[in-house]
Image 1 (cartoon, rainbow, N blue to C red):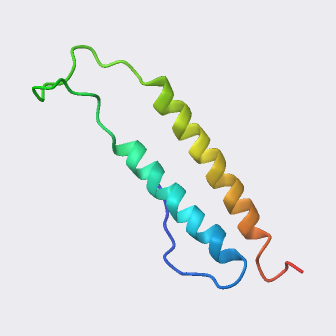
Image 2: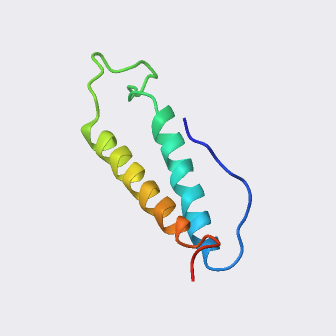
Length: 79
């Protein structure tokens, strides 16, 4: 489950906050995507996992973790 904090930080962390929201949105979209359909709207016969989509989600989660780690560096203890 994606937890979205809608508070907006000031200063150096604003870019990271915006990036975090963007990545969380992408993760939500990727998590709700449906299997491909034929032109007539019918689902394709046998649904196979999309390895490209799976890799994309893994990369998004990795990026989100990196952004969160950087944001921690912009907290009150950061000099």
